[in-house]
Amino acid sequence: MQINENFLNLEQSYLFSTIAKKVTEFSSSNPDAKIIRLGIGDVTLPLTPSVVAAINEAVQEMGEEATFRGYGPEQGYDFLKNTIQDYYKTKGVSLDLNEIFISDGAKSDLGNILDIFGPGTSLIPNPVYPAYLDTNVMAGRKVNFLDGNEDNNFLPMPEDGSGGDLIYLCSPNNPTGATYTREQLKVWVDYAIQNNSIILFDSAYECFVRDANLPTSIYEIEGASSCAIEFCSFSKTAGFTGTRCGYTVIPHTLQVNDTALNKLWLRRQTTKFNGVPYIVQKGAAAIFSEQGQKEIRTNIDYYLENAKIIRDGFAELGFWLVGGDNSPYIWLKCKTDSWTFFDKLLSEAHVVGTPGVGFGTNGEGYFRMSAFGNRENVIEAISRIKKIF
Ligand code: PLP
Image 1 (cartoon, rainbow, N blue to C red):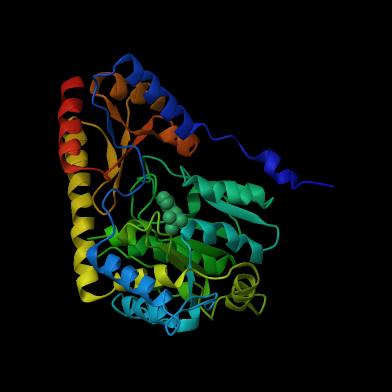
Image 2: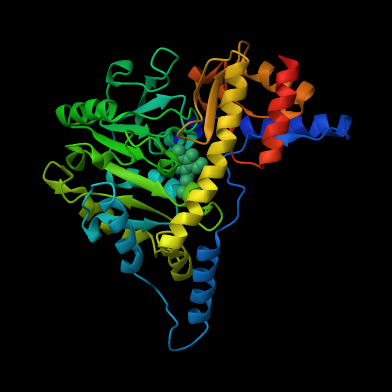
């Protein structure tokens, strides 16, 4: 019996366990301190009324013989795919229904997609959403890093790395909050086509983009449908982190050595996945109704206003930063190492953020603040932080 020894090559992640331990220790010795947590990447506003109503209705349907549904299509119900197709039309992107695969969230598909690729090299940004790196280590793929830094505003370009057949791009980015422009994505698309690479584009935070000049889908860029897969999620769009639903787009025109990746993924999904619950897909479809769109916009505006308060607060204190304008994350330069900054914020302002070094070596000396939280707490956190710097 042999295990997959690639798993032994995974680095232990102590980031969130160390944060939890430090916070617990601090609060047990300072029981009166009101700790404000702006470290998490989880939403805090509940599902919106339209989504809840659609889910309730679907639950009723499932409880009656005439409307009960068992296994659904592995790639998702057309009623949801239709709404996504229409949504892409508003971005000027035309998708065939069979190019859309409903998922239980972006994380699963970002990991599972490696099933359809053989051994090779992946080009991964540093700092990075940790799942890209770990799934590549599990799959035994070689990894080259793309150097995100202050000089490129944490938006690395092809010259900042040394190539790979799979290229991971995330925009707006977690952890940095930085967002690629159309021109920058065009450079990436041209580069991928020239080098026979495939871009795995993570647009989990696309709904936070408010600047109409910034792209919210890689397919807004000419040529992308022959070199890119897009992963999206309702987690941050509509508070689905616990409800679990997203989608992946694989254009029919995307081929490797004359093999259509769409067909391989369909085969993979129909073999290993049995689809997202009907009830959940009904809830997700409600996000795209007129009322549903209004509701999620209100929620995202709330987070974006939080982000602005955090961003402006640190900017006033003279910190270098990116993000926070078309993203729920603010990435700032600490002036110390990441953990010293964490300790100072916790012990002196009773505020919790996330040390940048937890997202890769290039994150050392940086810090991620998250806008998911309650407005009063955000205002209070910034006012306390202003007193300690
Ligand atoms: N991609 C990025 C960049 C994320 O930050 C996250 C979650 O935090 C995900 C994907 C996962 O999304 P989901 O909840 O849809 O699995």
